[in-house]
Length: 206
Image (cartoon, rainbow, N blue to C red; front, side):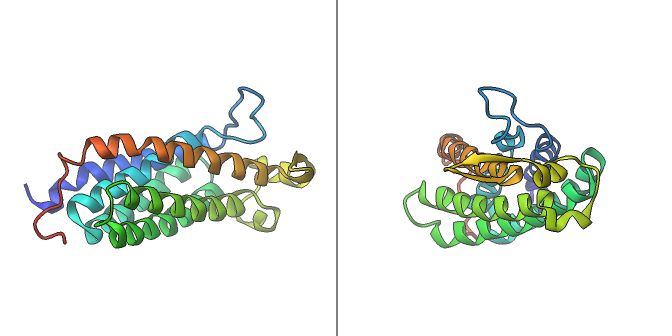
C-alpha cells in the first residue's frame, strides 16, 4: 500500500474528530457546576493532536501536513453544516495554526525521549488553538463574523468570578477548555506509547 493511500485513515479520523469537536463546543458541560468553565468539545479535540503526531511519526512532517490540510478542509465544510459560519471560521483558523505548529515542534523533537515530542507539541498547539478559537468564536470584538449564536452575546452581558476578578464568560470557558485539553493530552500519551511498535517510522523518515 502506498503512502498516499495509507494516510487516508488518518485524514478520516482527523475530520471526524474536528467536526465532532466543533459541534460539541456549543454545549457547556452541565455537571459538577462546570457549565461556566467547560464545553463538551474539550474532551474530543485533543485527539486531533494524537492523529497528527501518529501520522508524523510514521510518515514524516510532509505527510502530516497533508493530513492537516485535508482534514482542515473537510472539517470546515462539516462545521458550517453542524455549527455556524463563525464557529467554522474560528475553528478552521485555530486548527490550521495549532496543528501546523504541532507538526513542526514534533518533528524537531522526534529523536528525544518518546513522550517529549507528542507532549510538548500538543501543549504548545493547545495554547495557540485555545487563544485563536475562543477569541474569534466568542469575543465581542469579533462579533461581525456571525450573529445570533448566543454565547458571544453572553460574553457581553455576563461575567463570572475567576481568581478574584470578573472575566467574560468566553474567557472562563477558554481557561476550563484549555485545562481539559492538557489533561486529555496527557492521557493521549498512553495510546501513543502503545502504538509506537506498530507505527514505526518509514525508512525515508529521518
